[in-house]
Image (tube, rainbow, N blue to C red; front, side, top):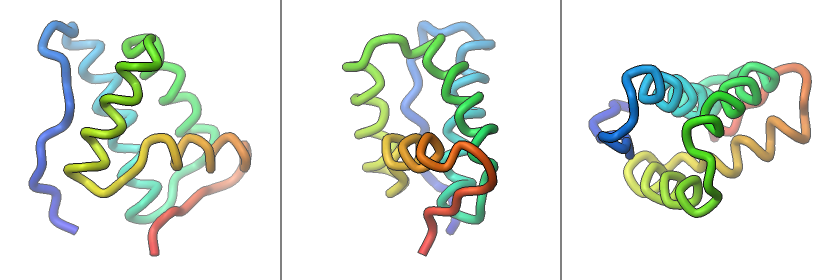
Length: 92
């Protein structure tokens, strides 16, 4: 799939925070497009939650990201939490 969408970012975030969020969203893409290590995705999620601490903002970003990419942050994180070890792949 050709990625031609913009990421839901908050311009008030620092460069480091934007990098953390982008790295996490890239892991979500990888979970759908190939496979990703569950522990790595969960580690990325921890860093992401340091930036996006409120549930409402997390849900908003998930909705926006799913709208433009078709990939659900929530479903990927739930799959990683249930697996914990090994790889997850959510693609068809």
